[in-house]
Image (cartoon, rainbow, N blue to C red):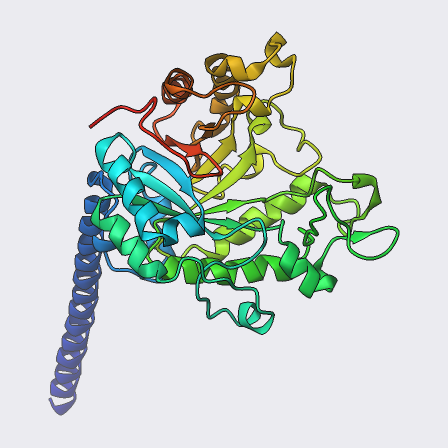
Length: 395
């Protein structure tokens, strides 16, 4: 009898433990589901909101890769219709006022701001160790966070432009990372600029450190430029270090590195490519191919300036005179490479006079052709930052 009662008591204990076990599992599942709903709600706000207040609508940083926002939807912001600003322009209150006024009056809704330009200088007050150790900084932006916040207050999407492998100041101060000449010393392009070696992972890591810092300022996107091997110099004199590995393979590995290292930052990513990537897929001797990048970043921005296409392209004596033809040809040929892929195409278009006067008609012709093939937008380039409402729709 005692044994029966003992067995009965043990059974009741086991049942109680089992019930608590299942109850605990249910509670954990409920909590996880609740977190998922909250996150989903915040993300839904981001994607339904067509303004640039991304950084204000969800927690600034959560380090769960499964919630990576670039994997969730194709268009987080809508069409980014932007223009380029140097750090000097963005850091000038007067100039920034005029740009904000132009954006407020027209269909424009985005800006691209240099944070590291063709010189290799970091253009804000950086805490990256190597930047400070080698004095690679020129704080032209001054209070960069205030600039970003001010633009966000006008519902402007803010993109940071960061050059990568054209980095002459780093090459000069860290020659072991620079591209070398077969005749000795640093290799230089026709402008006398030294380049860092795209095959060196130390340079990848250096740029990732800058990108992490830039993301912390609240930028919505980081646009990586000069993601290629050099041109415009005596290429036969370069002592390459990548051996038999094709240039495009080196660059593909770099894009993968970017993708992996930035996956937990609350920022989208984009790459600037030569315009010809929309038509050619051989790497063009610089390592740029659409197929290597379309699943590694959120946007690709080919520089489709009609003035940059050679005479005879599409049998045109002067491609600059025919922006609609040039843009449509590139978009038509390149668009299929983005089908079903993570990246969307958002081209740079010409807003400067070269080969022809780029008036309202020519600017609009480019925009119309871009919008025929993509809903990700376009970016106006004028190196002098001289912009007007020519060719733009008024609000």
